[in-house]
Image 1: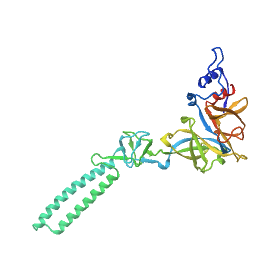
Image 2: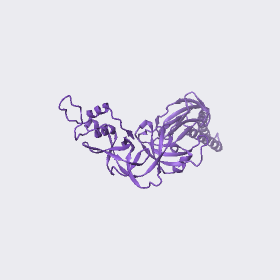
Image 3: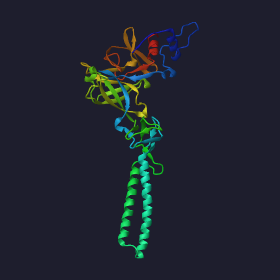
Amino acid sequence: MKSNFLTPLTLLSICLVWSCQPAKNEEQPIQAAKGFCLSADFKNQIKIDSIQKQTVFEQIALNGVIQYDQDELAALKSPIPGIVQSVSVKMGDYVEKGQILVSLKGTSVNDLGKELRELENSKRLTESKLLSLRTLLKDGMASQRELEEMESELKAVQIGIRHVKANMSLLNGSSENGVFYIRAPKAGYIVDKKVSPGMTVGDDADLLSVSKLNEVWVSVNIYANNLPFVKNGAPVKITTLAYKGETFDGYIDQVANFFDPEERVVKARVKLLNKDLRLKPGMSVDVLVEKAVSGQEERMLAIPKDAIILHNNQNFVVRYKNDCDLSVKAVDIVAENETYAFVKSGVAEGDQVLTENELIVFDELINR
């Protein structure tokens, strides 16, 4: 709601943006012509909204914080103790599934590499012995039983090699340098990072977290006096200082069944589509929850609050029909909330009203 204060400077600016009749001589005061119209330049500086009938409701204003979707979160931990050799990502980076994020030098990988090399040496030696036994068997200098025992020994070595290679593949290890690679399990953004090169990490240590951000959560604080009015599934509107004048629509997805003893609030969760990734985890927001007004279940004319002008203790709006047909209308507000003022008369459903720079137009109209 805006109050009207008319100043000479305002009148001068009005004449600059309205089409005015030329003065008959330079000594006459500048006046707006009858039947003036919005200039093309000034029209780009106004906003117009329509009046619609809505059920009268109040809005409860709560505070909240943007969080990433925990259902889409992949927390990566170190499966082995070791030393971090490299970290190839930063906070906020987008990663593809399978992309290498962290490399660890770990004794577990070194042990597997050593075991693999020993088994491969044993395999070559066993194959050489088996070849010699087959030659000796032809010459009658070795038995069939000795040959079968050597073949069984070779099979055991081959099984051992496959087992070690399978373990190394599971650990993304390299037998050449004993390095363990941690890869992204899914495509998404790095939303948490607790590791840097040179760090020594233990088994199961937290390293990174990856999450998608096309849908985010809002953690909402509900105080005891507002708890009866916040229900699962209730529609909400989210606003933030980062995007002044814009609202984001969501709904209450979950209300906790316990009271937080430290913050003395009940936590609720809002699910919100995050188009163009504009909402960032950690961003503070205001959460407006609709609450029906007792005794006002009827539908009334809802005027955007930005359109209301307070002048001489009376509320007005500037109605727009076309660029050359604008008028001031008095309205009596029956109820209001953070977004709308509800009225019964003065305007009609479908009427259009100015919601930005309407004070300049209002001053011109009442002072013609």
